[in-house]
Length: 114
Image 1 (tube, helix red, strand yellow):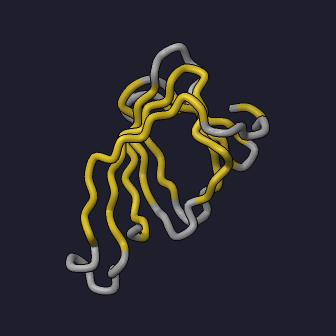
Image 2 (tube, rainbow, N blue to C red):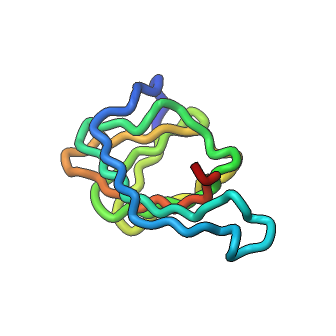
């Protein structure tokens, strides 16, 4: 862990939508929301920024490949394959790939339907 630098803009990131499901018919009071699954690929030196929060958009992340550095609350934490983290209403962060290998994560969240 280390002190957090300023968050740069997004670069070297590819986001692929894998699946969605309309939650309105599935769960009472979830009209207008969907469960979304995406694959996020961050190239070496890539950044998923700027700083963003997850208010009204809770989710979880699972790392498939490489190492992703999660910057939040002034702390940088590295996550490698086979681990992940929650993203709740208190999460404000940005991500980067400091390594030499492409990093791939699966991100699942609940979002308002477009």
